[in-house]
Image 1: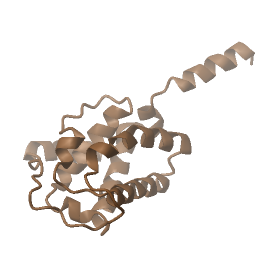
Image 2: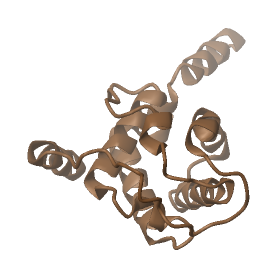
Image 3: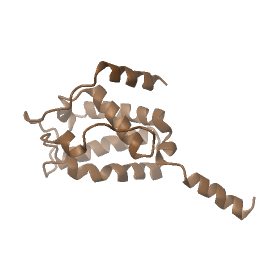
Image 4: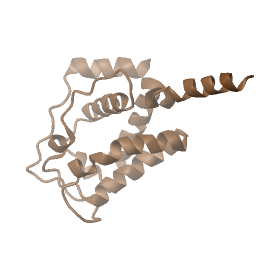
Length: 165
């Protein structure tokens, strides 16, 4: 194989989006479903999701990650500052969430390069999510927090259909 052909193959491999390298929507859906289950079971952070509709959480995360990684999805949820306003999320709780995400990515054997790229995309959201300095975890969800409304039945059905593909 000529050197020119090698450079062409290398360039084509580099043109793939992170979405494609992660395995597309089916793979992102599997990762998000595992991650959401892990978060909702994690006593360090699950109190922050006490008023959250799990179907909405997973649907919004799938769309957000799909779009952020170059996929065809359109995230139509709230911006991070609005979604987390008055949640009282601590730095420790945010770090616990990241640990849960890394554990899920490791479970699915996501390569280090792609894992790093995904974390670089999501990391800058920290200032929009964290409201409380400090390492505390397992803190109560403040009463003044107002969650997004639950997904409508047609959205939930669409999610279930997409998960089966």
